[in-house]
Amino acid sequence: MTETVHVPLPGRAYDVVIGPGLLAEAGQRIAPLLRRPKVAIITDENVAALHLDALRDGLVRDGIDSRAKVLPAGEATKSWENLTACVEWLLDERIERRDVVVALGGGVIGDLVGFAASILRRGVRFVQIPTSLLAQVDSSVGGKTGINTRHGKNLVGAFHQPSMVLADTLVLDTLPLRDLLAGYGEVVKYGLLGDAEFFGWLEKHGPALARSDDSARIAAVRRSVEMKAEIVVRDETEQGDRALLNLGHTFCHALEAATGYSDRLLHGEGVAIGCALAFELSARMGLCPQEDPSRVRAHLRDMGMKTDLGDIPGELPGPDALLDLMGQDKKVVDGQLRFILARGIGKAFVSADVSENRCSDGASRSAGV
Ligand code: GLY
Image (cartoon, rainbow, N blue to C red; front, top):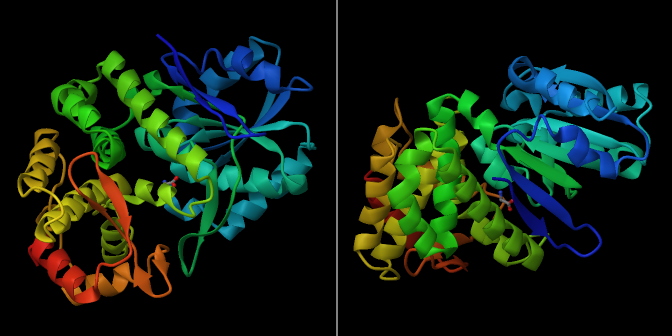
């Protein structure tokens, strides 16, 4: 039942292993990477309560000793303060260049611990054990690590590839449905950006996946990771194609900022709405068939997900303020917004020439504000 996706980056190739029960097998999977039978685990308190013992048991079964540091859960953990705390703790634990650090958790832990590993002793290896669907299909693969600052999210960080990713699909059973569906926003993104057949498969199997069909989950995680790996190998440091992975994200980042990064809107929910808006904008610009945005929304609605700005609770700022927030996006190059648009389902491309008027008009009309 286990699937492996190889990420063939020259000199830093690694495997993403996907399947049920990988926490219990962590020792045998990680042992080949170790020079001595010891690892440092960093996790958060929610994940620790659910999965830390299982991971440590899995390691001890193969004679691997582990030390663990447990951080508070939540986006605020991706801070300078916690970066310092992680690095100092790793030094206290005498973690050396040849040792391995384990990131056990969702995207916040993966990004923070990956960054800490990238700077500790000028770089130590790390293993990602992603425990959310979002982290399994997106953030744990591809080596983007970092923290937030008062200037914005993910503005400080490094590209540091993991040495292995263990995506245990059984842990997804412990996710609240809302978090699972938010992660599913990133899964849908892959179909929409580059694989129409996969999107068709999701239309059929998405509801079973949400209900806890493990084989549907494994298949969806595998295809998502495969697509991410292909793109990352083509463009590791996002000079071009990697920006495709940001389909829906320009809208999403503006909406997250407008909702104060609160639980009014989870990141993956914003990605799903953002994908629908990107298709709406593409259709209005005559780039893709008119029926594509409706098909995207219909699938999200079938899954019980948010599809429109109107589904976000509370007031939102008007189109100008939203556009202003989009202007803060990391994908602004020379003051120009680079949108990911689509010529159809599975046919996204990076566009630099969405003029502000058109974008404002399309974005606001797409959004119905
Ligand atoms: N999450 C987008 C990327 O890894 O490039």
